[in-house]
Length: 106
Ligand code: SF4
Ligand code: F3S
Image 1: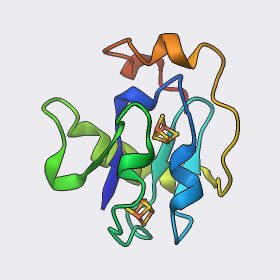
Image 2: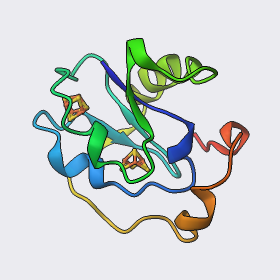
Image 3: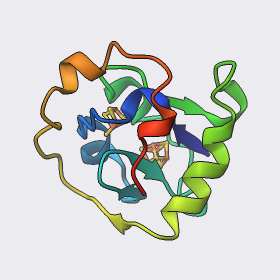
């Protein structure tokens, strides 16, 4: 499965959702996740994210492994998002910030 990682928090550009053939993105207040039970590993979303927040589960950057479980957990709670929409305000500023995990709203 593919996994949305920390960079997405407080950005949510949503370019990724437009290309997913199986509509497996789920939306929270300031983050998106991929439902691992639906993702077919098509690879299309990975290059679409302008800030490279999406990785294959076996290729997660160091420190981002926790997002595998976070995606699986929150995918069961959040609703599908199937169309691109405006990024969050100040997304461009937040895109540069590291260690945002404590800002993830559930
Ligand atoms: Fe959707 Fe393909 Fe990305 Fe999986 S890899 S989330 S199926 S676009
Ligand atoms: Fe997030 Fe990137 Fe998609 S910022 S919403 S994973 S395009």
